[in-house]
Image (tube, rainbow, N blue to C red; front, side, top):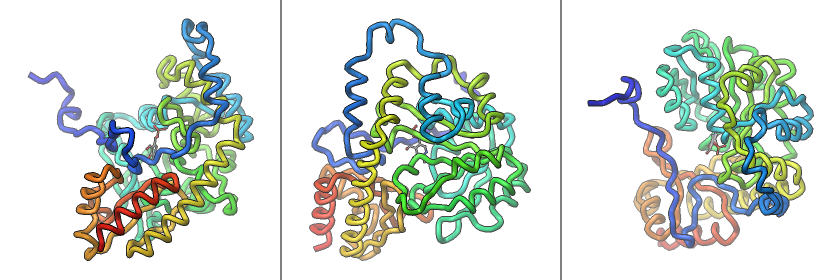
Length: 359
Ligand SMILES: Cc1ncc(COP(=O)(O)O)c(C=O)c1O
């Protein structure tokens, strides 16, 4: 006898990347920042008073909202703090999609989106990205035709790392009849020379909800802290109605504030990752793999057929060597590996293993 709702019984859950227990594993599979969090974060953790644990946290995460508003030049009413970026994705569906109405996703992208839609009882409208991993010109029209009230778009794109510029996002926000979530989980790694800024668009587009996370750029995947940025009218129903009471705990909030306030440290890690991204891409190319131009902290590396049995064989071989990368057995991705940019030492270990394989 199953007590699950029909849609829950029918669905498969999200498949997370492997979390190997061996501390010597070279872990390049879940896009964590390879550098530790800021020393200011570790101090804030050590100095957390017992009272911060005894009492409930701020129900609105007020200190974080103020810090994030200062950081991004918006009002605190335009920020909502969530238990990881993933909670914001769930809340966006809960808040803006009637049960049974569809959720729009670009294909391929983050595999959690359809899972969250399935939990909500929503069908998924999948619109394939172009060859260049960008939305095709009819993207918004196709979502509107299917009466999609909420569309997810990850930018820089995962798993390719392709960056869509703010003008293209403004055009999509203007054209879509529903809410557009721009999932900026990896935006911290974009080269600053692009002057990439989508937050400014929230002043003109009241249907634009931006996802940010402390997991990647701030090396804090372990504490589960994300946030949304948008027009006050978009944020208010999430912050005041659909968000769980106290979904963000007091320790996480303190650490998130400390992390955000140490921009000098965070930006130094982003710079290091960008340097390694360029080196790793060129070394992979030298071995015969081809990488999509990435503005993220990972590379989508295409493995030629003749290279050591192809992508899935390479994935398994690396895994046996204690080197974890991500393999997606799905159309357009099964010839490739998604490789998180690691420290220079981790990247060298990977490159040596690949060179050995192809001898
Ligand atoms: C595309 C994308 N969006 C959002 C997230 C959410 O991250 P978190 O819940 O750790 O903030 C991830 C995490 O891997 C991601 O890859």
